[in-house]
Length: 311
Ligand code: ACO
Image (cartoon, rainbow, N blue to C red; front, side, top):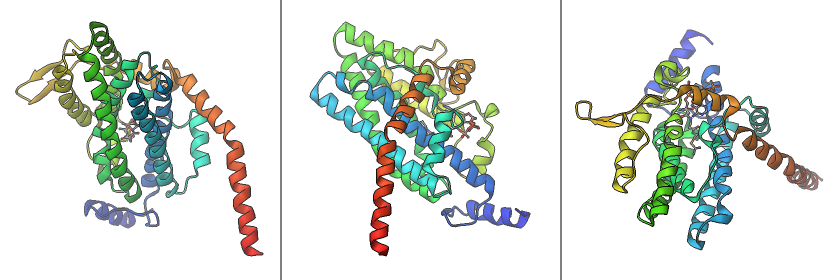
């Protein structure tokens, strides 16, 4: 890749042009997108597991219908994202193998267990809230197929966030036991939610280049701060407290100060040693293996149709 090509590519990015699948692009740009979109797709389908676990135990028909729809949406998000990654010349099979072998990452957040019904509220409110904060800017990502997929995804995520907050609000206004359950869920999900945004800017390996290519529009720390600022008043509004003694409004900077994140825990979970990593990958492997006959049958059917057409 010569300098002139890289400069011309950067000029297109700087002019806010969308890069499309058949356009020439630096190998590093392609690789970064395959990595990020692949990881994002895996997060969606692994993310179906902790919540899917509660579909049969949702406390009412209405809650069950909403949760079912949400988990289905996540499956759909995974499919849009795998398709977006496929436009960059990587196959679904390759991406899945990388997930199952542990080579490809997925979001740390999905390696925590869902212990009570309130966790479903906390996940919708906090995890989907964090996901929206991160994904709204991705609607303006320089790569066209990823940016377009994100528009639909964000609309659905905002419904997910609201259904979660509404569960939390209902519990927080319920019996003392229900309020206690909501508080306990917030206590357990708060810090892992802040970790979703990734390492601090100083330790974020890819941020500088991804910002330059306008794949990312904000740094990890910028988005984390926006999330804290948006979420703390929502929690206070329903009478819950945050498990951080250092959390405090800072008038001068016009945003909240918050305590240090446990990065040892973050890296442990990212490297496969979180509470649920093993179960999550086993569940995905089982789904992939159990679905082998469907893929084989679809392929055989497509071949037969082609043979009939060609005959
Ligand atoms: N969980 C697991 N791995 C993470 C996390 C996390 N929360 N945050 C960062 N990492 C990984 C990165 O993938 C990277 O690893 P790699 O080099 O092996 O690929 C490494 O930590 C260093 O991080 P960064 O250099 O900051 O990586 P990057 O620039 O890709 O930023 C981020 C990370 C913010 C997650 C980015 O990839 C992104 O915006 N992804 C799209 C959104 C997404 O994946 N959301 C998933 C959760 S939301 C949902 O599914 C509901």
